[in-house]
Length: 252
Ligand code: 4GX
Image 1 (cartoon, rainbow, N blue to C red):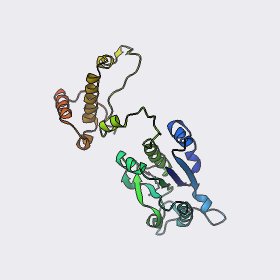
Image 2: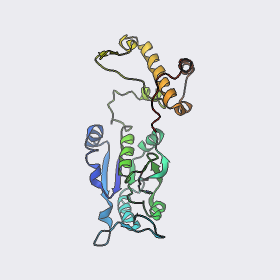
Image 3: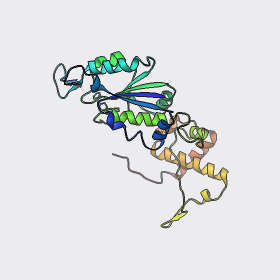
């Protein structure tokens, strides 16, 4: 997959893409990421990329011409690319969207700063607007990184082949079950005995139960989208009868 990022801050992207799984995926050529500095496409000698909004008001707006010239240069190389603008006004990003995007051969991500971009950029070049959540960042760069991270790990070969896609889909739209590793006892806290039992059927049932329990307690909205079997519904009945045990803060 090719990803072109139009930004005023290309340096922001260097270290996140050099590390770990993404770094290896780029090294292997599974993802090709390029940053295009919008300022390089400003045509005046001071390379101005922003201006005050028509109609007045606070802050600055990114000018249409530099973005248009940068876009046209990128698109001259691949006219079929899918162009995304990161903005709180976009469609809320989710795993399903990440999956769909991972099937595209070429993405162009436009990162806005200030109070946003001239509306004509949207009309001319943007296929889709995406938000990574209901909060305000200082620019689209971190949002673009989140999107790239989520999409990249779905590309064939990026995660080790030891990761089971089947298991992933079985637990889709459920929260994860608790995980443990050695030691089996830490400061008097024991790993659930069943995980040490070697009884794979019992372990599978326990994990499914705990995934369902967590989802029911923390994100009951997800249970409506999850595809639940009759066995799952039996497990849920047990969970509901046991009641809401563990309490976590509501995050506000
Ligand atoms: N999910 N931002 C865009 C510039 C901006 C300002 C106003 C349109 C209107 C964000 C998010 C996000 C900050 C990126 C403001 N664009 N992007 N930027 N949440 O907060 O994607």
